[in-house]
Image 1 (tube, rainbow, N blue to C red):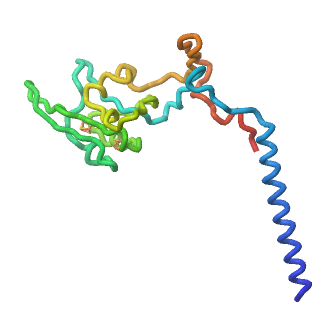
Image 2 (image 1 turned 90 degrees about the horizontal axis):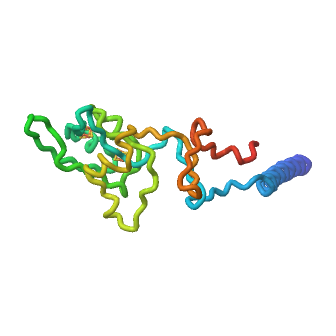
Image 3 (image 1 turned 45 degrees about the horizontal axis):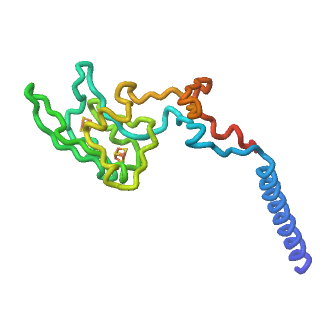
Length: 188
Ligand code: SF4
Ligand code: SF4
């Protein structure tokens, strides 16, 4: 019995040692791998991948009218209850949003509002720099969603690029799919 215990004890000891050696190997590997510090935002800003979901925007149709028909489906499906829509009827009898607000402080950027919209009127773009010291500033209204942050014209599409802020925003488009965050990290 004691011999069995001895063998089990030895086996556990070796397993522990192997685990420790593997962890130390990983630690030393990272100590000598290249730095991945990003010089954000003073020297560079990397735009996220195209599938990134950031600041919302509302779209216009070809006549320049807001596409939203104020059906409130987005507000109903939102798991955070952070969309408020108040409809009105314009002079042509079309239903439009008199008030359309999103509380970005509560939003979890799930994209359900975009998926639910029957009019293809709302989308999540790639703007991620909209932090604020006041949560009241994060309640974004209809006009700002239409005009800002400049995605309404592009449809939210952002070309993968590196912004060189030293040269007053130089756009380099050599990256096909946004920044590969993992390329500087040692692959196991
Ligand atoms: S992204 Fe999700 S949480 Fe944010 S407003 Fe849309 S449905 Fe709500
Ligand atoms: S954004 Fe779309 S889902 Fe939301 S109220 Fe407007 S039309 Fe309806």
